[in-house]
Amino acid sequence: MPVKDKDLNDLFLDTLKDIYFAEKHILKALPKMAKAAQSDKLRAAFEKHFDETEGQVERLEQIFELLGKPARGKTCDAIVGILDEGSEIMGEYKGCEALDAGLLAAAQAVEHYEISRYGTLKQWATQLGMKDAAKLLDATLQQEKKTDVALTTLAEASVNRAAAA
Image (cartoon, rainbow, N blue to C red; front, top):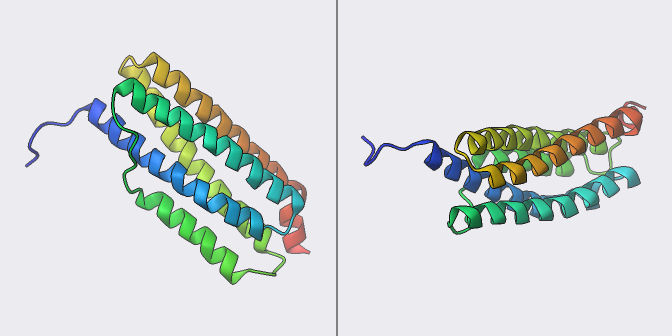
């Protein structure tokens, strides 16, 4: 039995710690993915997203500050698993035509996880009356959605075709 009843504020903070951990790990993974990419366009997309992710981490730190809490991550098994899959693809498909398609798929799995988390956090922040936090979360949510669209466009335009050739 829990020591105390937890509420939406607790869930919000726990989920914020989860996505903070995730973003920090994504920052470690993106340079490796960029280095592994065979396509210049895909490499550039990963490098651009690295810069965006740094800004997303800063926004999360601003939210922790608004809450008067230290910016601390909480192990996120989901992102660890998704990033491990990306590492496996880099190892198993190194030098293969399908490598970039696999990297793109792994990157989109990350994006979809982030879109889910940021959408939820924005909704909760709104419900909890945290207008400033909701604005910061929405800025990141919109950025993640744009990245997902850009990755889809890249996949359809070149990477998946190259893999199938």
